[in-house]
Image (cartoon, rainbow, N blue to C red):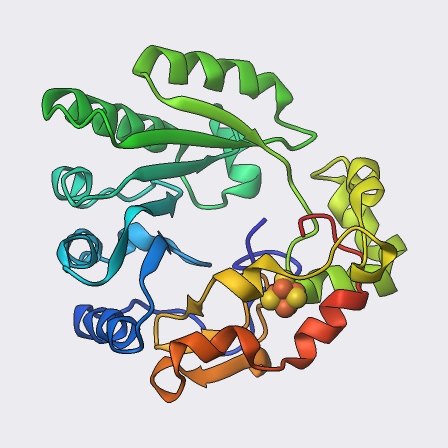
Length: 279
Ligand code: SF4
């Protein structure tokens, strides 16, 4: 589900943390170009809570008089293995914290979340739920996104019960052949790669949902039309599902934000011809 460790691992110097000054400058760029933000999702391919400035960034964009639309939503996707500033995070103006989980038992969890600690994640969920209650932050949504892999189904019931006990929303999320490059590679070599995918997911269900643009179901791409994806270093990527550095489009400061959806990209043409389920 994530390019950090799987088939579509990010190539090149792709890892880092965005500094507060760059974040501020990007928000100002949106304002200057007359684009109001109606949603912000922090994390992209990395772990946003490793960035100690995240609560400050959220507070900044939330309190900026011209940056966000009324009713906008700020979401943090996290593995929650690290929780450096729990109170600040919950009080930052964040709307939802979505925790990626793949097992309640350590041996099950670490099969996908390698190097992570299931017990610590659960402890952190409990801590956030406790802060929400104590600080009367009922509007902050806490959600566990439990990956519906083929090997962890026994743990899903325990995860659901844990969530009920802590007032946390539980959702099962469907694993997919992720990334445009990953899907294109899979289309070419589905036998070899299929064996790897089958170890994790219901590949037949995935295959049944795969469509190209031109077989009648899809007219355009919401990711291109509605979202701007900015890497930690200020580079714009075509979308969250494109991972290779050669598809980076240049610095966000070199564009008029309103023009980004209209920039022609070779990867979009590849994508349109590739059978993909998540589109
Ligand atoms: S069409 Fe382009 S923007 Fe949309 S998912 Fe494919 S690569 Fe991303």
